[in-house]
Length: 458
Ligand code: URP
Ligand code: ZN
Ligand code: ZN
Image (cartoon, rainbow, N blue to C red):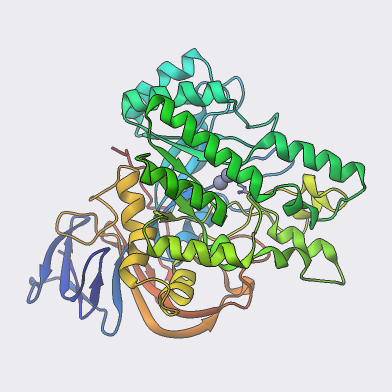
């Protein structure tokens, strides 16, 4: 039999209305009133919003960065995602040097299959471009991979050069895939890190100084020009500055097809975090991520960017490392602090509390950037990213009356701090349905086994 969710207000990227919905065989089968059939389970969503399950198109679970492995694997990361209302993640399956794309993808399946509690897909991060990789891209479509990522930073590790970018863009254009880019000039950063270390500047506060906004702006501008040569669309991950967004909007007006992602950390945290504790200046390591946190004026500019449709998606770039034992690897050298922070659990509540309630964006705009647009850009729509008849029944019941605070001690993500410690949290996810199966009840995971499915993206 089915499930009927009653009394909630349905919010999509375009509409807000009161209706009931009925779920059967993993799908939404009807929306309206008087939907109940004998034997149906009835769930009340009185006073709550019904949101389409959020989609996080930027996570790094179980990622080996050489010196250590992320604190969250697919089990803890996906449970945290569900608790926070995210029903699908797209993680970056990363090709190691010397590997084929298929080998890289298989490795990620081994990490995630039968472990993931939410649905998942993979982008493929290309770190070792060659002719074989180029021809493999075609075959990856049958394996459900329709988007790729290249890093313009992390010299001698992940960074690719302009020729490799051009070749990859050329191929992706041919096969209709979307290329994503980490835009920072790795050579500028390498130069500045060496300079800082030669001057014995080794504490976390030098991390942002060695990754200035110029390094991002230069990479964004260069990438756009490279994409223009082969007339290919591009997706810029974790864009963090006003300057970079200005470049994008100018080039978009000139006809370039560019999609922009930002993250809650660039909307809500700023460079002051690197010097929060005078007692132990290493506390700033909690915020060592790339790009680094920026200025307050960048934050407001990015919020406006969402409002003006200049920013398309808000993802988390969840890449968590414990402060103790992991961030501490760089106690005597900021460049050895593993880069990244946690956020998969808190994106929806952060966006609601700081975006919707502060009237920076509407509820529909929030749904758009955390669910519908990621689904549309990454081949999941309308299976996911909306509430409509025929879509997967990925439904979040969100209670707007809850009032609390974000605390590391209450979180499900497996990391010993949160960058949002003490932040107000108004509203919270109470129940989550993943393809019709209730996986979160009263804000607790109730699924005993990992029910996440690999999604073959279009
Ligand atoms: O600091 C970050 N963002 N770490 C994760 C890897 C990346 O650059 O996306
Ligand atoms: Zn990145
Ligand atoms: Zn990332």
